[in-house]
Structures are given as structure tokens and as C-alpha cells.
Image (cartoon, rainbow, N blue to C red; front, side, top):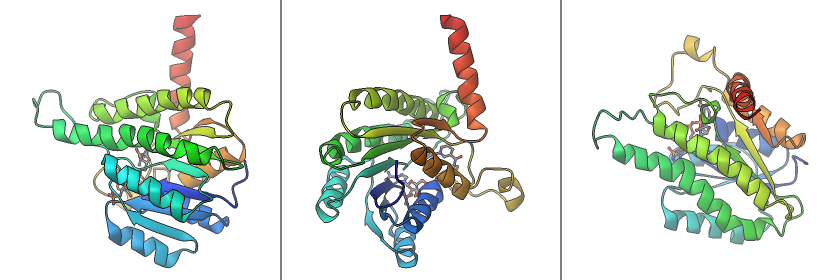
Length: 244
Ligand SMILES: NC(=O)c1ccc[n+]([C@@H]2O[C@H](COP(=O)([O-])OP(=O)(O)OC[C@H]3O[C@@H](n4cnc5c(N)ncnc54)[C@H](OP(=O)(O)O)[C@@H]3O)[C@@H](O)[C@H]2O)c1
């Protein structure tokens, strides 16, 4: 698909991968809408970049998702790209009783329920556009989980599954459904930034954003970036072995 001339809503576009994607899409002559819970980073981005607009929104809350979708479609009638990027990751121990459950709920609402609800709210609008798409940001951990962040991995595995079924259900509409699974990326996701030496070994948010744009450009609907591909491939090899 073309990667210029769109109006894209990127959830969680104030930092990390979402921010890098907003920067690159803005440079490619797209209008970009970003949202997040904290106003300051969003405001800074819109001051710095052309054609970027923001709304403070907590996508874990159903009413806020509805208001976000109303704002995006009424103020920006050409909205044709939804990037379900906002995500959180929490350490959850099944040995801690209910103590960690509040965090786990937040992960499920943010990483899984929000993409489902936002897609549902926006599909009627998207399907009237000439070249619409939904882009789900999953993770290499959707394919091979990391035990310390079990709910996060489960939400990403579910979003992977949802990408498959959504793509199938939308096959008779113009809406393309992409799934991009990044590897570990230098960002705020893990609660703190690492030191520069550690971060230099990780994929940068800019590289992840370039990978997303390349996948869109080449119409590659399921892409695992960098080392995440190994996690996806191994799952596929095992699946083939088990299922002949
Ligand atoms: N970093 C990695 O290693 C990695 C690897 C694979 C996949 N991913 C995925 O990539 C996506 C982006 O993560 P990132 O690495 O760029 O981390 P990040 O810098 O922490 O970005 C996450 C963004 O989501 C926003 N957000 C979180 N909860 C939200 C909510 N309830 N409502 C609205 N916005 C919310 C955050 O803004 P506020 O805090 O202001 O709300 C933040 O801007 C996530 O889906 C993540 O799972 C990341």
C-alpha cells in the first residue's frame, strides 16, 4: 500500500515505537493523530512535528475509546489507518495471590480489549476509505512467551490470533490487516530505560518504525522484526511437525 497521504491514528504515539512511527509517517506527508494518558509528551510531539494532532485518552477505558473514535472520525474525516500500538507490560507472579491482579487487568484492557473495541468502532468508517488498514503491534513474545510477564505474553498471543481472524472477516472489504511483531526494543515499556550500553544492543524505536512502514509498503501482512522472526519461525516449525 501507499505510505503517504493517509490519516493515521496511533494509540500510544507519544513515546517509543508509536512516537518513531508518528515521526516517520509525518515526514512521509501523512496526517497523524496520537493519544496517550500523559499530555506532556503528546504536546511536545505536536509542537515539533507537522501534521500531528493529539488527544489525551486512556484506551483501557471504554468511554474514552468511544470519545477517541468520535474525535478522530469527526475532526479528521479521511481517517484511514488505525495503529493499535499502546501497550503496557507488567511482571506478574502466580505465587503472589491476588496482589498482582490489578496490573494484570490493566494489561488485558490496554493490550487486548482496546484494540478489539477500537477496531470495532472504526471499521464502519475505515471501510468507506480508498486504502484503509488496521495495524496491530504484537511482539515476538506472542509466539514464544517469557514466563515473568505471563499476562503480557497472553495478550500479545491473543492479539496475534485476533489479527488472523480480523483479516479473514474483513477480506471482502478494502481494509487490510497487518500484524507487526517487534523484538525487544529500547523504550519505556519495561518501566525504566536501560543504560545506553545495554540499549545499544536492542532494536531502536526508529528501526522498529521503519520495519512497520516497510511491511505496509510491501503488503506483508504478518511480519516479525529482527530477532522476533526466530521466535515466530520456531513456532511455525513446531506447528508443522505436530500437524504434519
Ligand atoms: N519495547 C519492546 O521491547 C517491545 C517489544 C515488542 C512489542 N512491543 C510493543 O510495542 C508497543 C509500543 O511499546 P513501546 O516499546 O513503544 O513502549 P512505550 O514507549 O512504553 O510506549 C507505549 C505507549 O502506550 C501508551 N499507553 C500505555 N497505556 C495506555 C493507555 N491505557 N491509554 C493510552 N495510551 C497508553 C503510553 O503512553 P502513556 O503512558 O502516556 O499512556 C506510551 O506512549 C506496545 O504494544 C508493546 O507491547 C514493544
